[in-house]
Image (cartoon, rainbow, N blue to C red; front, side, top):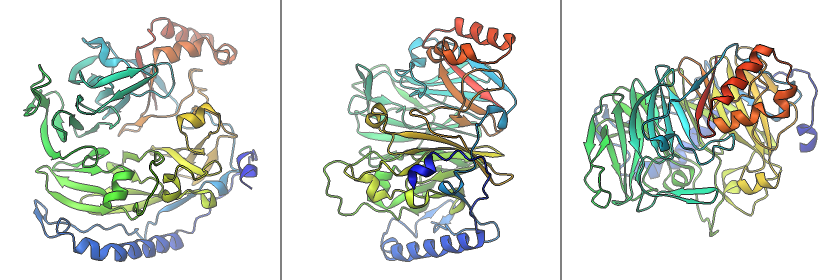
Length: 488
């Protein structure tokens, strides 16, 4: 049955299997049951309720759906027949390319994986500026790609082993590249790891002010005396005490989200704080790690977080519900992304001996005003599985206005975007979406140069003007240059 689903190429547009009233009631019953199950533990935890903050008494979480606007069920297997070749013009009409200016210290833009489409570096933007975060630090640019300031430069604790790179531990003192920064209302939120002290700090930096906090424990790391911004909270021995994601959610509040392993151990998925470090509300992770006896565990799928309509949006790993955080204590279900019988549970996903080869897992989710960009995989997308061609990648567009699913027919063995029929350039799938709805993808000069030399580009039916544009752009790039493809 699974094989039939994957290879279905019918062009019929099936309606989503959605009974919104029943879905809202189902989620409400489920959430109430979970809350009752955890009630005694929460009430007996002196760290959970009764403490005061700027909001008064600590808030109790509310995760029930809005019965007047219930969450929308997105049935992936049930809509596989709604497939056709996807094109960039289905979702956009304009493209521009912004080359990031080389900073004074050229190593700051270096990405160890510049030769592949999926870079290690990430970008964030509030439509007024661009933040580049890479292995070697954090840089700010304007929207034209002109260098503005180096916010932080990582100088210690980075080691290379052939095509692999490692960082962290006792000799790392800086901003970890795997925890993306957040830019909200001109404030940059980021996590800072002090390997020497074995601690981490959540920082809030007002862009462009140059304000810094003195460092107390960096005697072994000369020349670095302060961290940009204000310390919001200091965590203990990392990584267990440090959040996986940081988001500003209001002028005086922010949220820290735990990794799946940490939340499964502690029972806390998300915490909202005020700027004094007081806990406002804790949100429970109901999928706990209990009696796990294996010596190793499988790496979980990535936590999905982004901001949409000005609200933090989160889809916990191996949970089919997408929530929006309405500060300080409301976690509102807005979508249910269902894989039906092909869903993998958290306990099975954690077990390295459990066969995931026929299971479907959400890989990424991005949201614009009109569309959801959904990418999922069959099987776990581990490097070993990808190397063995044992993973299948699928792209789906969900039209929010009309409630229709559009599946890209078939699958790919690597993550690939949809055909760029606007200017004949590279395929596109967003890395990040700005508050104004502009879609961004970070690419290296190497990838662009490889594309213009590819058979796909040579055979593309595009205008001579567009062909010359892409060839000219590629000829002016070094392999390690960074370019942002901005689609609107």
